Length: 257
Image (cartoon, rainbow, N blue to C red; front, side, top):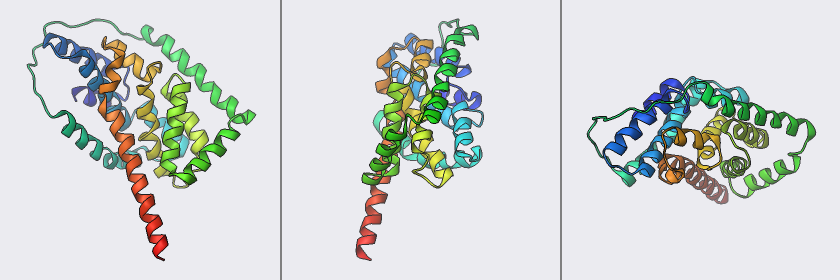
């Protein structure tokens, strides 16, 4: 969880948080811990902090798209994070280790991120093309029908999942999901929270997405580490379960009336 704190302060999973991840991975290898499990913890920690930082690029992008306050959104995220964190603790438990570090790794820098930055900028232009040409009109109809059949959050989660597979970075996935699901939630603050609890944490689970590949490669962790990033799974699953339970309660109340 040390990497979580660094991510909250820096607002990025590719900057200082990645450096802290290198330190954590170095310590883990020295202690003989599994690189897969440690890599999963680092990846989950990156995006645990990425959601909560007031200078996070993903959080600020969602605020801009939904026209909401970053601090109001942070308060909402405090509530939705409690249950998945509880499940994580029950699943993994708590373990302390020797904090001694035998070696430090070097690397990083601005030049190492030029290619990633170019990919993000180029792919983000697709959203404007889709919007002006109406290429996503049919997809929006599918999303709306799914929201009616299930729940709005389920539709947002499915949209985010598909967009994460198609796109290669978190920024594009956020913009696509916003464009397709913007009409599902009239409450902008609620919609911003839905995006934070779905698309932000789903993107790094896709092996070819920069959101997960860059943090893992920076700490020399295997790709299968995403399997151990429990927070990234538990947050959307608990939100989905909550939305289904709430919808069922509304249906029962309506039936009684």
